[in-house]
Figure (cartoon, rainbow, N blue to C red):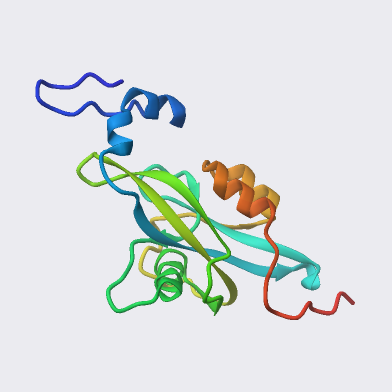
Length: 177
């Protein structure tokens, strides 16, 4: 646990694995309700349609591999918010599934240094448009990788599982030539 000044809440030591961080400050995990976020599981068909590629991006602060996600947006449905996050964070648009394809949990460090447990509902987006001009361009690295490679890169165990088990849903399978 990081040393704290008198009267301040202890903060987790980020050099420790996630479970050790939780063990050091359990009151931060259970102090409030889980917060909701919406994520975009963006994919495209590569290699003539026979392979699926998943989009992973780096986070702005820690440069670790994540998927586009964000907070609910007033006046937007969850799948619309996920699509907006994909556009703003990665410059991709496409066909969005209206129902979540899964969910995962993680700890989000807020701007004030507090840690909030979050539930992320994931919405599948089959990417049809990629732009080099988007809001967070230059703040993130984007890469298209296999579902297995995407799972290796992300930290959250539940997200790893979603990526390894990923299957494109709802569209007819393309000719495999």
